[in-house]
Image (tube, rainbow, N blue to C red; front, side, top):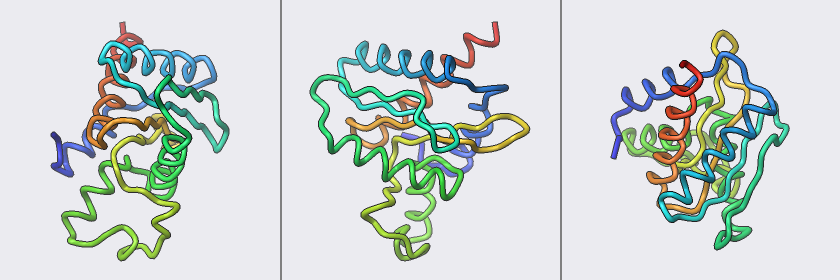
Length: 156
């Protein structure tokens, strides 16, 4: 389990896109679904760019609660421009909650693994790629593993 803040920042620096469109969202969303199926787990998936949902899918055995968790984790990414897992680890290292440090409502912001910034090189954060359904670090790991796999396939 990666909890080192520098390693988490390195993930964000590495997992960036040259460009990102509707087709890219579809391909990554489908790859997330396939990777979840290969792990025999069920997740809800959402990909948002510029506050526009480009991909959303809820696998069997997920619930509306998973979508609520996605929204709360995505809010963290949109506000802080870091993964929700990073922000949880960041505030844990400070000995504070995100609510204490930033005065945000815990009903709207969840600094738990499962939402990753959609970063376009030379532009910055333009959205979030999110999953919910697993323990928080496993949500984060599914995301970063899938993004690394996708980006490696595009580099060929």
